[in-house]
Length: 146
Picture 1 (tube, rainbow, N blue to C red):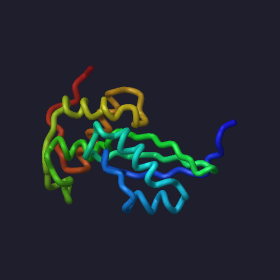
Picture 2: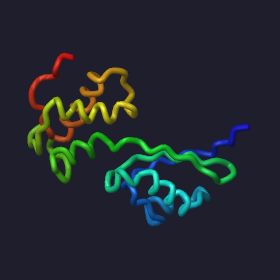
Picture 3: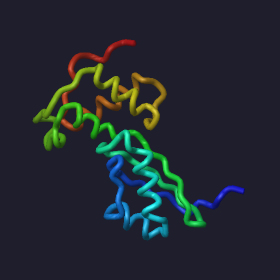
C-alpha cells in the first residue's frame, strides 16, 4: 500500500552544500523531517553539481519519511553564469548587462527541457530567450530555423 503524503516543500539549495542552518533546517524541522538524513542524501546525490543552485522538491509522508527530486538549475542562474554577471539589470529595457547567442540559448534549453512545460526545443529556446530579455541580456542574431 502506498504511503500517505502529508505535503511538499520546495527549496533552492547549492549542490553538495545542504546543512541544518536556514533555510533547510527550519523548513524541514517544522514538518518533523530528519534534517541530517536529508542533508546527507542531498549532498551525496548532488556532489557532481557542487556550488550550483538546485531546486529540490521534497515530499514528506505520515511516517516522517521523505522523498525528494532534484531539478536542473534555474534558467536565470545559468544565464548569469554564462555572462559572468552577479545579477540581472535593474532596468532591462534600457540598460543591458550582457549578451549571448542562439547556440548558448539552445544549450540551456536542452539542459532545462525536462523541467519546462513545453514540447519542442524551439519553444524551450523562446522561453530561455524571454528570461534573458527580462534580465537585460541581449540575444544576438535571429532564431535559427531547425
